[in-house]
Length: 365
Image (cartoon, rainbow, N blue to C red; front, side):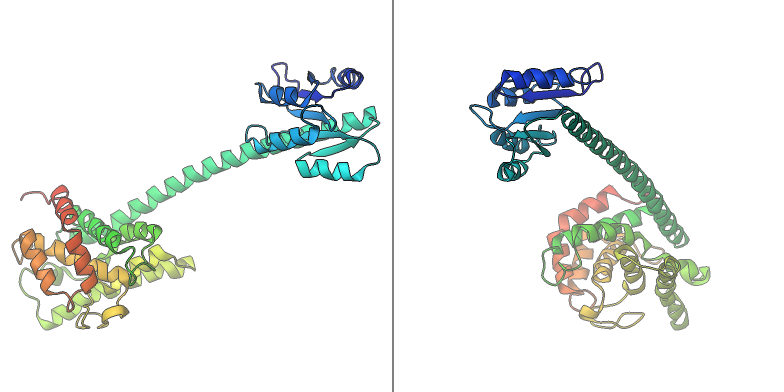
């Protein structure tokens, strides 16, 4: 579009009389550029501001109208320009060839003023409509991106609030959550291409695991303080009560799924982690006594991450162990407490575990 808001038309024809006739017909409505051969038409079409529409005679010298059409359509800068090809009368094959070369419309000689004006106006309107739709689509995409970002931030904030509420009751710091979710990701990255795990560990699912990991102990909000905060060993009845935190956590996530009327991988991971992170690979864990592959992948990852963090952290009932001691204890639990492949992944990611532990240390008390 030119500065005077008139659409720019490029007319290419080797016959001076045709150029003069078309120029006289269209100049009151549009800004006109003229070309006498195919190469000139290509050159002018590339110049800024580019034409909004091109009228091409099929019989242009040097490069005919069909070749010009094809070249303009191959160039991303000009592919969207509407091309109107002028062809000899009574030759359907040339009309078909014009459409095949990319012409938006084909007008047969002899040219009729009303037909030319109408076709030009229609194709300019179609071009404007396409541009408006493209602009609206980009605007809508920006709105969707902005809204999605805001919703993601809100969901993350709610997840964090729920997770920290549970951890606060257990006198654990928010750094525990920071650490375990990063340990889980470190394990998942190591196992992404392992044949036993790759079906669950797409990049998208690893992101979901990162978000779901903080919810592993949300069921602790249902455990009485006298049990949850007891400094000594739990008696058998108390331990049975403590085991229920896995059920409470699962039920909380399942209630969300029921209320929504659907689930997704994030909610599934959150439910699996909350319910099954205390299962052991040999079947001696709780609450279901699952073994091996029956334990969800997400819970097998969390089991290693959670135990490692518990070992290196100070608790009311134990001192903090060194990284080396924690690694050795987990190695000893391979095949019994833990999936051996997950333990191997931890050993491969040992440096990353140490970095995470150092970055998110608990405050000195």
